[in-house]
Length: 305
Image (cartoon, rainbow, N blue to C red; front, side, top):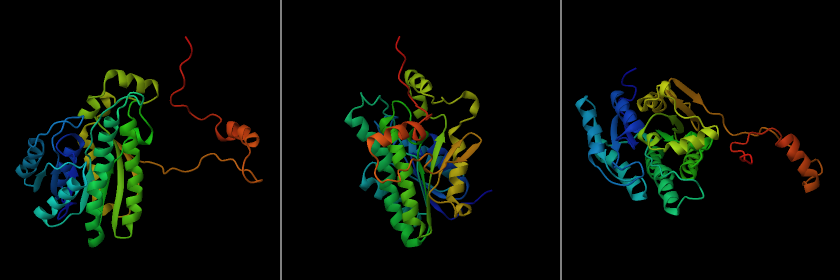
């Protein structure tokens, strides 16, 4: 299908490279006018390079599309507001927000600094809020809109060495469910994607960290899985289109040729005390037996040498 997003205006954060770039390019191909948001930082969030956003913007224009570059940071409320205002100033409306922006500062939790925690939370979690909040003011007024956030398997399942990143991505998944409930009554939807793709963020993970995660049961990205960053874009465009008006508050795992709807958290095992509150004597055998027997330990203690 072509022009499924004709007449719509989209903001895509982190769209100078990787998954975000692929989303911005495909949205333009589908007829959307795109605000390409990227300050051109390094994987760890340092630096600044305006040409990163300009290059993608020029590619879209050269292909016959419409786009404008924006180098505002998502990590501040002022930056988020200016990003939304860029769409309004240049295109007069806003219909879609896609929040791909992210950085990595991986470290084991016992070595992680406060700054490493704060910086990752600021870009991922707060950076999602700053743009979505200001976009939703417009979406509420116009009674329409699409929000597509980016969570991660690190947030949904957990990856060793990513306390900051995993907390942010888990927070984004929860935040998206709340936005879906806040905005559904106004005709807007909010959904989240957990992508798997070969990006420069993945490439920056040291081999030692990959080995630790493999021992914990976290699979590495395989060379034969065709996990190009551009492969995430089609489903993002689908969620942004009128075809997905019935989809709200969901999380999807997207990689290669696979799109999976993730299950919502729900109780699995339960124990019940007919006499009221548990005592420790009553609780311990039931908790150790029916409630927790056989559950999976993602990181069992090493055996003594």
